[in-house]
Length: 122
Image 1 (cartoon, rainbow, N blue to C red):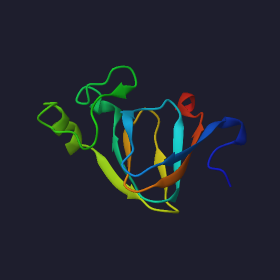
Image 2 (cartoon, one colour):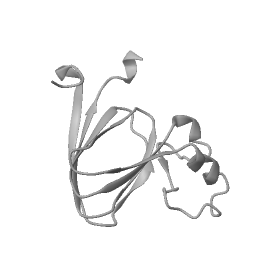
Image 3 (cartoon, rainbow, N blue to C red):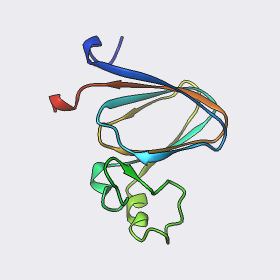
Image 4 (cartoon, rainbow, N blue to C red):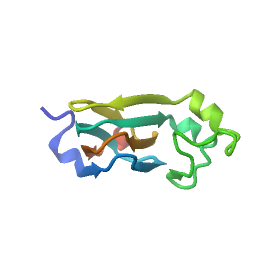
């Protein structure tokens, strides 16, 4: 069964990534499941309250999970409040709306994002 009503489905995105590929740090307005099928991906999440420490502009940040903390003085504080995991095949990660996330493929990988509307209900 789907974790949300079918009419709430917004979009899906197939992500096929080569080893070492990083997605910029950003947030999404939609609720999101990252369904991982192949390879390994490192995911770092930050709560919306860390926007100031991540030097956010709009919905994106120039800061990445592996950045040199001395380049961004407040990044160390953000990293102290981050959640980190490595996804392997079969893993599903829920990414709450407005949470910042940075994704790096450790090896060639395949995953699917499933986005759905739900923020307005909170």
